Image 1 (cartoon, helix red, strand yellow):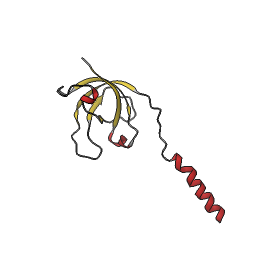
Image 2: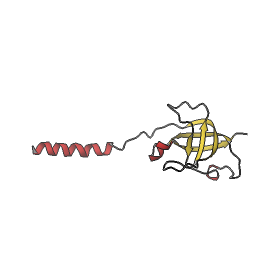
Image 3: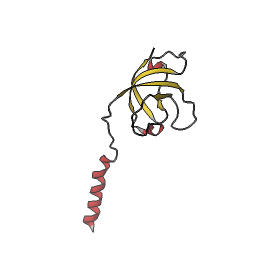
Image 4: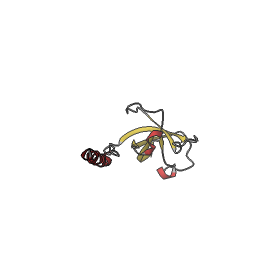
Length: 112
């Protein structure tokens, strides 16, 4: 009986490092999109900028993604009017914000 308790305890300690694993090797995607404006919804996982990605080929894409950023942080003047046509490099956010359809953006260019 004592061996069983030690075995269960050992198995618990072996499993702990693997419970928080997630994929980190996501490739960035280059897409065309439209910044629709700031997300003004009042919820725990809302906020930032709303972006619609054209021809999104990801599995079950949402109607829009959220970027946890502001226009000046993306290198776009604050007085630019919405909607803004852009080209962006992005990947899905796999952190705690993934429930809010957030993406991580590394490069944004305004399409002229």
